[in-house]
Length: 232
Image 1: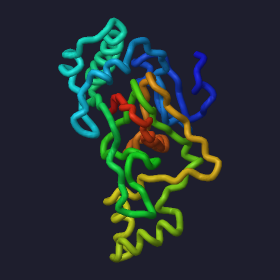
Image 2: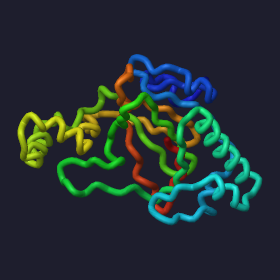
Image 3: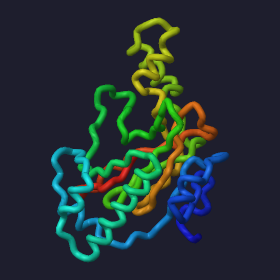
Image 4: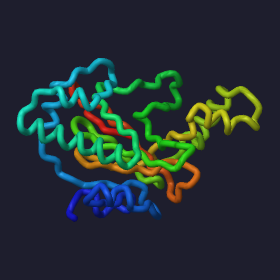
């Protein structure tokens, strides 16, 4: 299959939902793409949805209530089918209309919001699924091109000052406040944009995981443009 991700060791490329959920992560491959070129007018759907907050969950009934053109109807059918496939698989997908995420501006030396490269963690075996239908798409980055922020000496020192408690409890403090989930790209790192339309499965940090979790980030939104994102 000819596509923009075929030559990347981090990414597995499949051509069906069944392959997406049944292909095992292995080696350095911790992201799998159901690669597809979607027909339909997703921009029309975005233009007709109502943004109630910076992040508004779009329910099935909200989609079904929209008066759409033929191409808008095609886009809606694709979204509804993706939601059904994931729900039938046992996932809990959420469709979000996004203006922006909340920024973490509390500490000036480390960011822990979703715009920072990070991994997802779960106490149980699970994966992250996402698809951007409209707007800016997320990035991933190979694990060997990033450094855990808590291991960067100057950041670690400031975190120790912030902790201001027994040394034995420092690692627990880092986990409790999710500092350990965030990563800094190394010089010359090359993030990979996930593009729109493809449904992705990303490896999560959990006890049974056989590969490194996938490091990813939310994109800075395009000015004046909302994102339409499926995630679970």
